[in-house]
Amino acid sequence: MTSQEIRKSFLDFFKSKGHTIVPSSSLMPDSPNLLFTNAGMNQFVPIFLGEQKCPYDPARATDTQKCIRAGGKHNDLEDVGMDTYHHTFFEMLGNWSFGDYFKKEAIDWAWELLTEVWKFPVNRMYATVYSPDKSLGDPSEFDQEAWNFWAEKFTSVGLDPSIHIVNGNKKDNFWMMGDTGPCGPCSEVHIDLTPDGDTRGSLVNAGSAQCIEIWNLVFIQFNANADGTFSPLPATHVDTGMGFERVCSIIQNTRNFPVLTG
Ligand code: GLY
Image 1 (cartoon, rainbow, N blue to C red):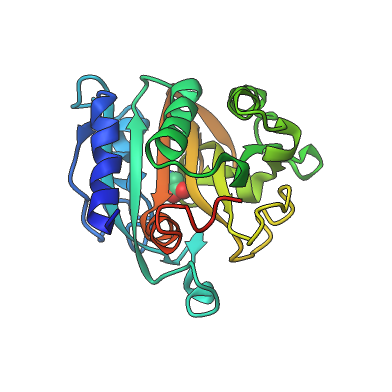
Image 2: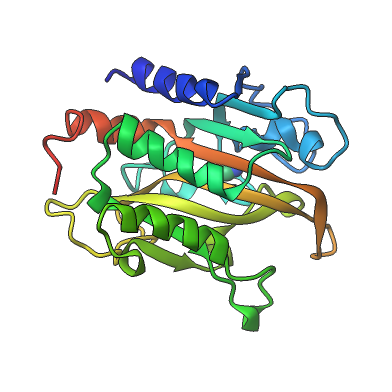
């Protein structure tokens, strides 16, 4: 697939699941706590916070968002030029639920797109789930619900969930746009790109170009307040972000996977 076909395939997939395709917002964000737009969800903050009514029916959207992460909470600048998968500018593909579907559908559709439509080799896929370190005061609880949904997926293809699901702490698995704003536990999808694809999760979140995150599914449930506390939001939401260039590089460099099937 060409990059245009990959982008279109993502948007068409979520359109077929009732999502409205919306344009990318400007790189200059409305949020006063951001330097540049750093994620697809930025333009939807007022909807997540319940300050604005969702204009989509059903309450779902999908897009590809231009992003720059050059400061603040998500600062990729130190990594640009040092590895092969951080860039000064990137496109983030995403799908959103505004108080509509939640973890089950988000995980079902991520699995369907990756394994059935794009044919990613399942043995090379790892999912992470939020496991707070309570001794450090991390918010919320272990995300058993997400673990169970991923476990069902890996078990259905004969893979061991205890190997293919990796727990992560607040730094890796509790996503916040900035120090304040909508946030929640997240589940990321990582792909093992080693020649044999047999690292059993050991490279997940280890800073290796041989195993990279391609998609983050955020389950937005809280607002982070300026005083460091977290307030539950009036509704629960889904906010996903997929690294378009990373997915293109994997699909294209493996010529749609025959080169890397494990
Ligand atoms: N909003 C999800 C992400 O940027 O990873």
